[in-house]
Image 1 (tube, rainbow, N blue to C red):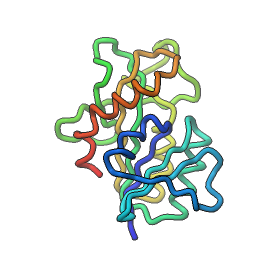
Image 2 (image 1 turned 60 degrees about the vertical axis):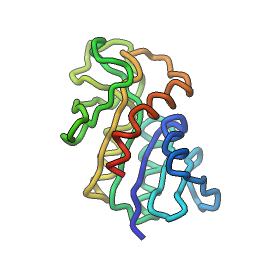
Image 3 (image 1 turned 90 degrees about the vertical axis):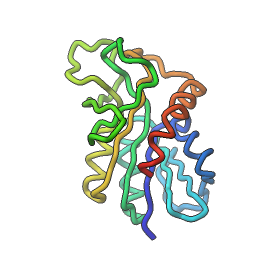
Image 4 (image 1 turned 90 degrees about the horizontal axis):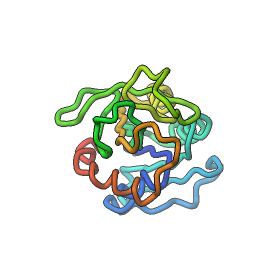
Length: 178
């Protein structure tokens, strides 16, 4: 059965989808990469993957999912830093497609948080988007990257409750792409 994949690095980024889509954690999966969590809906149409932050965790968990499930649509949703302080915290962007009523911006994926935009040539910065796109393109023709501005290049990880509220606020705009 084909599935839509929702990929988040953090559980706090995924919590809104888990709640609204009534997803339950699947604890029976064999050989799941350490730290990776998978949630599914009762109709088995949606698979939500929480990979952990960064390149290795993103690549390893996505390869596992694509090698074990039939994914026909893949969505990455998460927070991102923004180099333009005039853009409001909580603003939603799609970084790989032009979509109606959703802002578009380019994104740079880094391995460690940036403290300055000195070498940044894009509006947004995160730690997973590039790897999500590279892996997903090998297996799936239909992918989206949604990022919500969480900070203006602050190296501190935002509080979980703050991340959950940011994603909840943009959920109505994203759910139509599921």
